[in-house]
Amino acid sequence: MLSSPELVARIRAANGDTQEGLARRLGVSYPTINAWERGRSEPTPRHRRTLEELAAELEIVHELVVLVIDDDPVTAELVRAAATGLDAAVSVESALDGWEGLVKCGALKPSLLFLDIMMPGIDGLEVARRLPSVDGLDHLRVVFVTASQSPDVLARAAALGTAVIGKPLELDTLAAVMAESLDAVPSR
View (cartoon, rainbow, N blue to C red):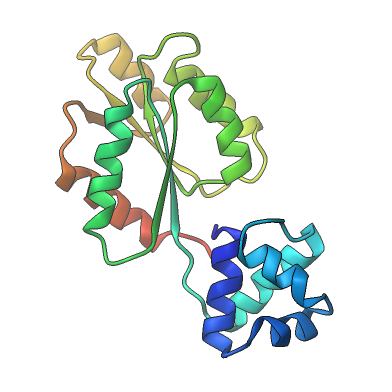
């Protein structure tokens, strides 16, 4: 899902609207549109829905929102590097542990999740088991990343019905997974 500043900017660009023009169309003030576009405030849920509907009418391309949950920050940097080679808008966010990752899943509603299996505290397998209780993740694709070669760990990951990529991660593999996921990004 596009951030509010990006969504407002893309709508204005696609429609040729000024901030004042978009404000009139939505029935809000110019300072309100300016604050949304500059990230100083967020639209109300009703206005966010209206913006999303307008974006759909204008056929504005939505970005692929990727979340990386891994206690090794290098994984997120590799995903970001792989995303730069794609001909699409990709937003990569990260969390360093499972609890933070679950919270970010609820807030960001990512389309793709790269999830480390072996983490201290709540591991990736437990995060994956808890994901169905998070609203709005109907279209989430989970891809486990792990350095583990343990048949038990790999079998437990496979039982959750998700793909597994071994570490060390390769940019081409990450880019291919993101490219596949772009085709399945729902319009929101």
